[in-house]
Image (cartoon, rainbow, N blue to C red; front, side, top):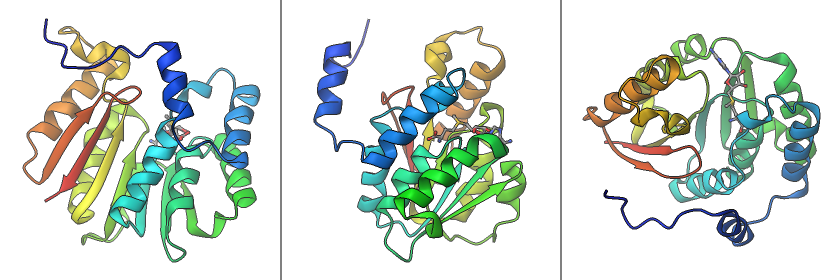
Length: 219
Ligand SMILES: C[S@@+](CC[C@H](N)C(=O)[O-])C[C@H]1O[C@@H](n2cnc3c(N)ncnc32)[C@H](O)[C@@H]1O
């Protein structure tokens, strides 16, 4: 069976990889620990530890100044991206949970980036539909309710500047996307992945980062 040239990611190799990435800063570390101690049942929603530095890297690489995120949770991905923005950059992040995003607000204030981040508590689709229709977004990160991924994508793509970057998390859906009989959210992600592949408004690549990450660039 074709497996590409990938090296299986053992625990040792994962630790080695993290050890060769930028370390979490004290606020990021606090946020990871607080999320695990205070919200143990849902802590798995947080982006994987290597994704914060990756998102920050992508912000710097693209020179993004206007970012939109769907799915704030306790705020680690937003924190990582906001810290990489230039001082006049802004990040709009969307969630429906006051409880979970309270941790985010605390961390952003501690890190000194709260003034760059706007949090909107409302269904993200509504927030996106209220944004200006013209292309004005440099980077977007989709990491929320999987059955709305196609709707988020279709609101975001026309609003992306040419060359703008979309990053989408959980495109493997824990590996369930290879199940021909997938149902529910796994089927929703399969539909989303097919939707992206067929979309000639973007160039896209799917990567084996964490639970699968798609990167796409608006043509
Ligand atoms: C996987 S978590 C996001 C993790 C986050 N990016 C991080 O770095 O920790 C998904 C988030 O999407 C939010 N969410 C679910 N449905 C939503 C909706 N319709 N609109 C906005 N946010 C939603 C949840 O409340 C949850 O906080």
